[in-house]
Image 1: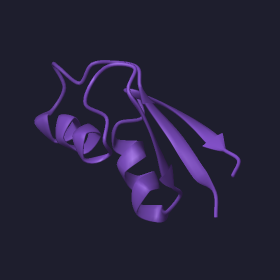
Image 2: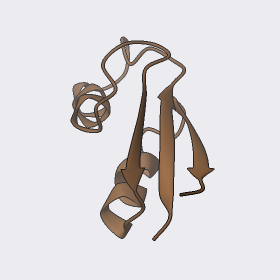
Image 3: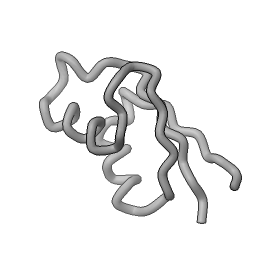
Amino acid sequence: MARLKLTLIKSPIGFESSQRATAEALGLRKLQSSNVLPDSPSLRGSLRKIRHLVKVEEVEE
């Protein structure tokens, strides 16, 4: 299964509070923080909601 590396590149301040909550739920609390998560449809849906705030890279295992 593929894994995705998420990096918060833009602050969620000034955006809807639900977008801030989504970023925190994905483990992205500070700028430039990263997290590696397994790819899934629910993760893709969350990423679509905050796609303007994050950088996504596919990681080889």
